[in-house]
Length: 481
Image 1 (spheres, rainbow, N blue to C red):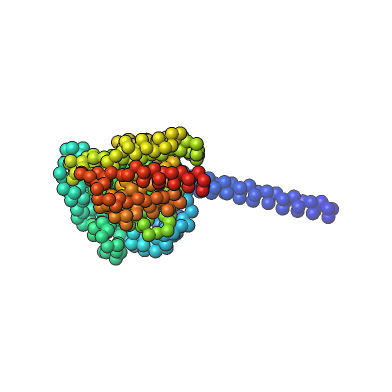
Image 2: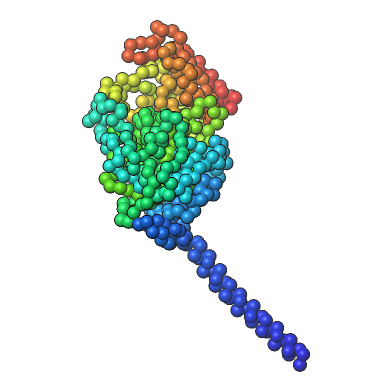
């Protein structure tokens, strides 16, 4: 009898545990499914607090690291990314932010307006649910053909922003935050107003938007600092390229490098194209190009430089990995020639040109008949072809100029020979520093004979000088390597 009594009690207990197990499993499955598919967020709509359900995979906020986004988790961030394709231009890497000075930037963060404005080390800022009112901005629409705006003043291409151009929801009357001197973000901050917002029915940009003003917008070097800064903003805020919009707050005419922005990122908006108040769910005020780590030539390194190279080449679908072949090196010259790049130079005249291009090609080719020796004015090529040309180069030779920014995309074992005329100081070390950052072989030559300086800013380069430098680089690549 005692045995039967204990068996009945045991069966009851087992049955009870089984029922509890079923209930717990059902609850866990529901919570798991809900957590993996939906995120409850609080949103301000029409001035009232509303609860909305957003698919987790569609929110850029979920990819934000806690160090960068502490206090922002309850802000609205809907995003509807473009349909993804299997094209290899997708760049899906999410980075651990562990390199200076980026780590320091994120540590020096200041938050206002319940997280609607977050400043980072006086360099850049993240704004949430910000409205741009285009009628408060004065400037040209931009995008015109250069031939239609020749002699246009450069000042006409920059915007004057009135108070209220940017508006965010904030209880504070003012946001006591300062940016660095000579930064246009000071003007942007002056144009920022905080007030209650009624955004019902307002045109909305749901992707994270990186806003910037471009300076020297057709200069490959200076535009590269903007590309790099936008890349940093993308990885800091843990975005995919196609999930990022770019907002140009300037009125420049069309430039040859404009198309690269749409290749690198998802969408480009000109401030001059906005016709009505527009709500941006997330907006980054990006770093001024002149303040970029890429423009700090005294720094021993640049954070995420090789990752930027991978990103830039990959988005242009350039994946060629040349291996060093010392029986057939590729020696390539970049030529600087006159061309009209912007309205302030209608004649197209440029400086630091090589007078004896053909002679240099001929003497190097005769001395190294098994090598490929070519030259090109690569700014006439589209950017993808430029990158392919550079990726297939072992030794790059050229006058100091913006085209040498392609040093960033040379193979890791490659070499750069940089030439200077007498009138251009070698203290301009942009590309020497790039070579050092990438551990690329580098040599410099500056003309010391005024007789070699010719009319219209041409310089005669002694052929024996170039030949000697090429041979020295060949030895470094093939014997010291």
